[in-house]
Image 1: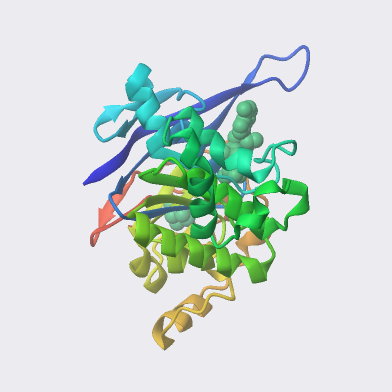
Image 2 (image 1 turned 180 degrees about the horizontal axis):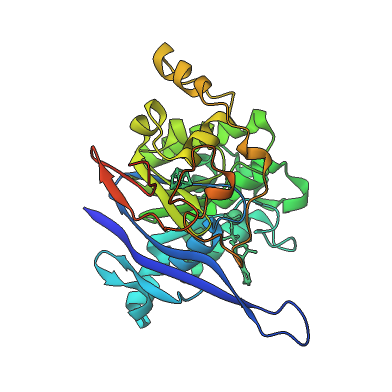
Length: 325
Ligand SMILES: Nc1ncnc2c1ncn2[C@@H]1O[C@H](COP(=O)(O)OP(=O)(O)O)[C@@H](O)[C@H]1O
Ligand code: SF4
Ligand SMILES: [Mg+2]
């Protein structure tokens, strides 16, 4: 069953560059579509600034879109109010990149985790402590941590607290916005394993946002590769790693040299693409290049690329936005 469906979603920001000038339009999200099914992981991948967190904030209903819609179980989330909005807020939770910034420094861990339980009236007061202990144990932490404060914990422990807080309301979907980026490499694998275990146990779906293809390879069912506010390639995760179609996907793969792809054939393929285009700067979403937005960096550009915008096309069951296909 489809839980979340995103249709032609756009979010433009108006930005003022100087006192005397007219505001400019920044196209952070520029018409994207995807869906997330029950018990699945959809990964959104792309370099910093391509619009990933804006998509996350739209899905959480923290901001409103310029146009387009987001359906949760068939209902437009921007039409929800009262009880239906409350139910939606419970069903979709977020884990942020920086666990320290998303925890209140003046609240101890017990208060942090019991807050959503109180707001959503999930548990009787007398059972609250047991529930908090249970949630802490689910994320691999002992009860002794309850009276501590965020600054007394390690980065990994803090992210575990954020995960426990998200789990407290028994969500269906977790939006994980670069949940590993602020953590030491040694801790990243532990948190990823934890998310994988919790996904199985709670039958969760994830919108997993990352700039790191290594992470996404092991964690996702489907991938959308995002560039300057648009998804330029959609694929099943395995298909994408065996054969990236869009030159930007090739670039992302080639700049992630440590991915161990599991078999000889795919790892050779990844090595074959050594593009130099990653040295060029990402264009600004205020001034998106004409034609294919990737053309200034694309080593495969040809005649129509700087003039004609490529449409999203289906080719062998894959979706890609590139004149080569
Ligand atoms: N509130 C805002 N006002 C103006 N510009 C914004 C705002 N939020 C995000 N942006 C811009 O939108 C673009 C996409 O940002 P973001 O979604 O955070 O990208 P990512 O998460 O992929 O790094 C960036 O250029 C960012 O500066
Ligand atoms: S459309 Fe042209 S410039 Fe754009 S990715 Fe394809 S080949 Fe490169
Ligand atoms: Mg971001």
